[in-house]
Amino acid sequence: MSKKNKKVGIVYSTNQHFDYEYDETDKEKETLEPSAQSLKITLDKKQRKGKIVTIVSGFVGKIEDLKNLAKLLKTKCGVGGSVKDGEIIIQGDFKKKLIQILTSEGYKKIRNS
Image 1 (cartoon, rainbow, N blue to C red):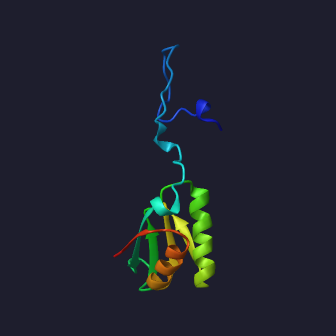
Image 2 (image 1 turned 135 degrees about the vertical axis):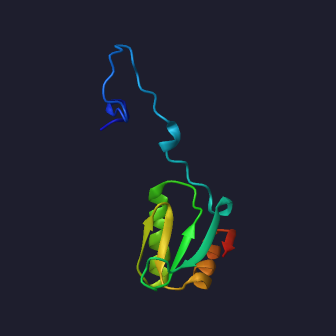
């Protein structure tokens, strides 16, 4: 379904010339170069039955590129994970290893929390 046919929040209008204006914030941003990215790595175990996961957040770019980065990180760490809400979730405590991997891939601004 194209954006032109999608009328979000409007049920009916008697105005024949009504045209709903869409917010352009839904558009995906272009992926920044790895050296320009500012990533944050944190550990979390909330709502995960006590199991620790490592979360990489702050990626700016297309979801496709985020998924490719997640696949690379999961492969190099040898664990499972997922991409959810613009974050990469890696199963287990892999902070140090992720910092090494991201640094070798050209990511320079990595915050460790």
